[in-house]
Amino acid sequence: MLDASQRLDRPSPALAGPGLAAGARRAFLATRPAFFVASAMPVLIGAAWAGSALHRFNGLWFGLALAATVLAHAAANVYNDVGDDVIGADADNTNRIYPYTGGSRFIQTLLFSRRQMTRLAAGVAAVAISFGVLPVLGTVWLQAGRLDSGAILICLPVSTWAAAILIINEVPDIEADRRAGKRTLVVRWGAGGARWIYWGLTLLALSASGLAIALHALPLWYGIAALGIAGLGLWVACGISAEGAGRARLKRGIELTLAIHALGCVLLIVAIFV
Image (cartoon, rainbow, N blue to C red; front, side, top):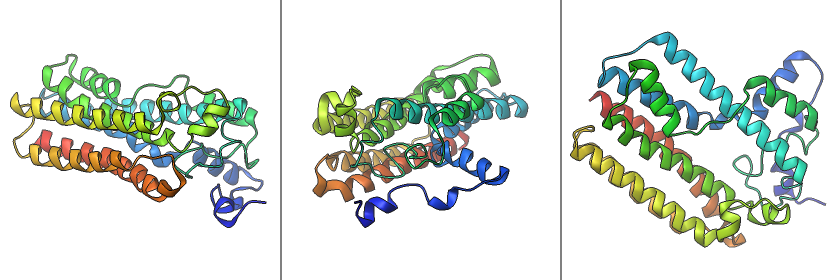
């Protein structure tokens, strides 16, 4: 028997039902669209740099790059759910923090079959791509046909913020992943290792931002923003724990990590244009 919190910790039963509209809604939500900001923002940053620093911008290329990146992200999310269902990682995960960890739960709640989820993943894109270096530099190259040191430096904070999302999201799933034989970095190193990784990523983002400021790729005022973001990241890292007593703070940490990525990317775009 599931307690009240676990019954609510899953997709709404209202998503079930026949009809094309209901099926389309389920398909959209199964891709976990709330996380698309993690792939869309790097494309925006790359386009901003190409337009501001290299004076090149093509709206069609930008639209195609954004669509391709988001579709690849959607496919990666769905394929991840399929893979975790195959090995039993999601079905056995009672420590998940929905909707951030433990998958979309669409297979486990019978909203979609495993075959339907596989078809959905194949329908939106074929491969997963990274959410930092590749979309930023790829967009700059697509727009301008070349790269510069500034583009390389600004892609590093974006990459570390995206990696931090992946690291902290794996913490609630440690035991379920371990039982399923899913040897993620956090399973191997534990919550303590996840804290050190998160700290390292935060300091790397700050160092890259500082170097970009020193080389005049970013304005001096961005240093204040970078320090603020780093301070918030270090605070989040201190709260990373797999213990039940720290579950509420871990959930806040996951939400703040998503906010760090989104806010950091927005501030980068503003700094590039200013």
